[in-house]
Image (cartoon, rainbow, N blue to C red; front, side, top):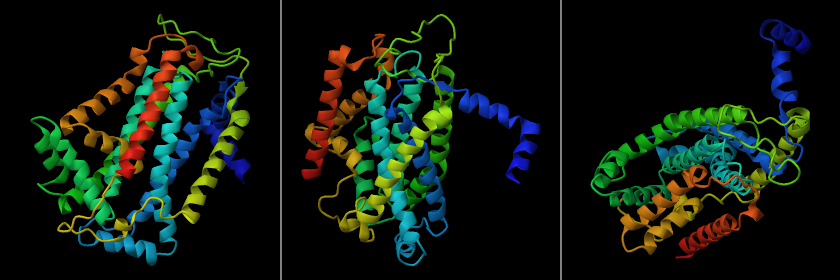
Length: 365
């Protein structure tokens, strides 16, 4: 049956030719390593987030009076509803963590350098959008934690000169976080941002396909196909290994490891994404103590507390984000090996240690 279906499709659309060119005919450098499979892991995570999000929307009610009750109903009454919601909540955190690892590997292997500038820019934009979709989804349960964390997050925008108060009111749909805020955040979380993220993923994969996979800066392929900005040239790897089945098995191995860690958190550490305030309905008249953002926003949170004004703190963060986004246009050196770039390696290690220190400080403060 399947063979007949394949022959029917192949006769009309050349499925076999596509498979030959895009899978077995797509060659990768022979010294490629496991870090390159993180992109495939991220695609799987995004697919899981979309599917679990769609299942949650069957029962979730984006109304300030019913949101918390609908989430409680999903967790306690809907068959396997607890599992779907935990997969969505844990997956949100895991997506940020894997994306950070993916960006770190790209930095260390110099894969952001020419001709892959737009690969990095689209990837960095995806990182910002993933944080945005996580923030907008944070308000959905309408708990004490989500309500006041959103209040703190949106209030920081008011430090922007001139436009700050207007932007805060636009985000909230009013002076304070309320039903209008929930409606706007839900629309962004469930409709707008997933479409934008999917489109950027498509652009990212398109750029990746057109430029070719960058060889790891280790071994004999380190300087293969040096880039010369004269005319378009696909950086292939003659004599390399085919994506299928050779590297597809590595992708499946990495995805399996991810699922093992992911399900271990879901079943054995289910409260990881939550704090006690996450189980109490939102009360605009009762401010809980020690409300803090998610772990990936803790460094930003602590930075705002360090500087004497929020505007200065926001400016420092904006400068750092802009520098990272434009890194391929700033670092023009053709050298990609991290050990041969001591200044770069020092800055990366210092930046990571600073981010960790600020995050721990923000958690403990």
